[in-house]
Structure formats: structure tokens, C-alpha cells
Length: 353
Image (cartoon, rainbow, N blue to C red):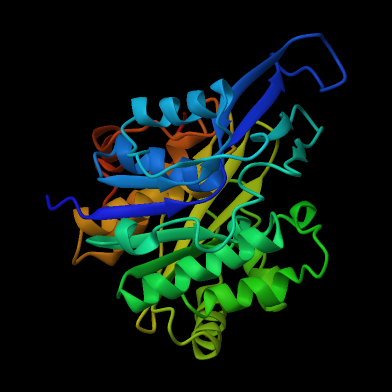
């Protein structure tokens, strides 16, 4: 397989949680893990044996260097990470339990990444020989400076002919800087991209065009494919540069029982993956990033089979639900094991993690 260079760009975070299903207000011990959307994609790709470089800015402290070391140990090229600034961004995660929904609290103000400015990153050197450049809406949500640096990267990637991959990743609690306009900013980002991923809720928010609800409680749910096809056709007319769209769809039946599926639109054709019925969710954080990492690997793995690209991406996302932390540490072999015997896209099957 030809391992083409992939570059991802975003903020590395330190995630804090209490043990078990304790609330953030309970107990006196936090556990910590590194994560963050674009880093999650990088680790997923490295675990699938892709050549991936991750770009961020970290504080020149033991905590910052430990984050880079964590990624490097997992196979990610961290040689272009910048060091400087005051602190690493963090977030606090309280998992769902029973009827209690999950809770995320961000603490990212004045992070090393938030002070990133255009001109700091040597993008022409980094993007040389790069096949895919991946960013998400979060890269522009932290500060105006970070947004400016993101558009600088997009401009140079466009100039160099690099395929740009975009994940909407709309997080309403992050857009707090003066003059922030998330819908306008994310729309401008999307207009400069070639491939796009997002979940159904994010698609609805960005386009302000509600879709048929995904309310599957098991793998027998019937999708309203004609309505989705019309909706994707309209979306492509509005963003003609984006040639391929993938949408992940999840229904949280309960804290431990999720259903998951995906749609892939390309050249006017809309494909549906099977519906995965996941009965023992361990950690749903990073499932969308696992979708994205699976997709970028599947493009090389199945270059002429869009249906297999979609099914492989879904299988990767399904496995992430079984892995604690942000990172999807599933190998290509493990993802293929999920697909084994289920290559027919019309086959509906149940997967127990």
C-alpha cells in the first residue's frame, strides 16, 4: 500500500475525569488522558499504519512535552510541533450513566494553541509531499488568532494542490472570542475543502435545513434515503468544491446502548452503511474522529470501492465505543474483523462490543 503523507492540525488537550461513573463533584482523584479531535484522527491513522504528521502548539513544559511524547509513542510524527505559550488546553468529562447525559467543561483560555498566529508554522515545508490536510471547526473556534492561522493553512494547502478534509466539529461553548461568528466561519472553511465529515446534528445546524430523524433502536431501522439524497444534492450545489460528503448518525438509546450508521454522497450517488447496534458503550468520545480516521485510511485501502470506504469507516467508529479515552487504538486488522462477512451493504447486522 502506498502510504501517502497526511497532516492534521488542531489543539492537543488534556482530559480529566473521575474514576468509574463518579460525577465531577464527587471523589478527590482525577484521571488524565491526552486527546483532542485532530490528534485523535492522527492517532487513528498512525494505528492503521499511515504516515501522519500532527501540527499544534504546546507549552514548553513537562506537561506539553509529555503530550507530544504520548503521540510519538503511538506512531505520530510530532517533529513540527511548536513550543511556547502559557499552558495546555484542558477539558473535564463526566460520562453518561443511566438517564444522566454526559457533561463536558472546557478550560482552554490562554492556552499555547489559542495564541497561535499566522506566520508561526512553516506550512509550505510541512505540506510538501502531503496528500491530505485535515482540519476541523475547532481549529478556528478557540481564538481569532487561531482562526487566522487556520485560514492561512487552508490558503497554502489550496495553493499547493493538497486535498483538504474538513470535520464540522461545531462546539457552541468554544466560540467565545469577540466577533466570533461560527456559522459564517465554518461555512467559509467548508467552501475551501474537498472532503467533509460531520454528524447529523452538525449538518442540521450548519445548513439550517432539518433532515429526517435517525431514531433507530436496532439494526432493522429503515432510512428515508430519497429525502437524504435530495438534501445532499442541494448541499453540493451550495458548496460545489466539496466532492465527497460523509455523515455519521448516532442514536443514543441509553447511556450504554447506541445505534450508529453513516451516509456517503459522491458524484450524485448516495450510499448507506449498515446500522450498528452497540449494546455496551464504554466511551463514546472521539467516535466522529474514528470515522474520519477510518475514512482517510479506507480511501487508500479501497480506492475504487466507495461502499467499502463507508463501511470500513463505520466499523472503525464502532470499535472506538469500546476503548476508554479519546484515541481509537483499533488496527486495520481489527477493523477488518468487524467487516468480515458483512461486505454486502444491504446486510443489516448487530455488533456487540
